[in-house]
Length: 216
Image 1 (cartoon, one colour):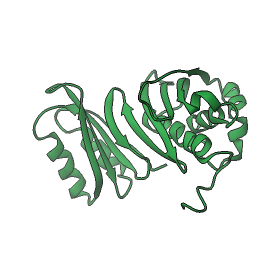
Image 2 (cartoon, helix red, strand yellow):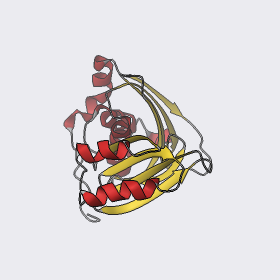
Image 3 (cartoon, one colour):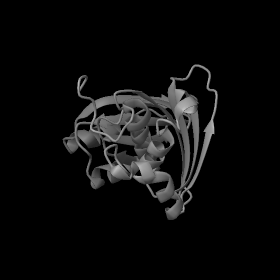
Image 4 (cartoon, one colour):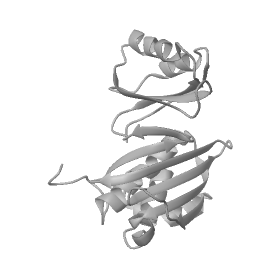
């Protein structure tokens, strides 16, 4: 991989392929067809996004295209045709990775998601914030995301469900904004969990919302 790099539409693995994956991750977290996306571009993304096609790549991912899809170059026109409202804003984010995008999306049902991530090289990405929760999510594994009240026993009960269905946890992180309020649990898994697994996790006492996202 270090020699050949990802299979992609160019010109840049970080500015194009990685940007597509950032858009794909935002769409996956939203969980529905988006109708509007406001995108802040920081660092080199802000400086070179037109020349490297970063704007087209991000929009392509939001449309659900993968990094080797030839429609990437036409994504802005496709988005307009589909009625997807796209707004891009070059910004200055102190201390941010040079290839950072902050994506705020609204879906067809009115669901809103706010995601911050960076393209860290070679087409790889790192999502650092989802809806105000500090996270570490690469998209290399399918994941179960659980928003829950910050109370004892919730993590154990969700873990027990995964164990019962023989779903193995590869990595796990829990983030909270304030003690005793709400928290976000992210479990990166070896396999995509079945719908009934996600549904049962969502029914755990003190869980507000549970959903899964595929690897991208």
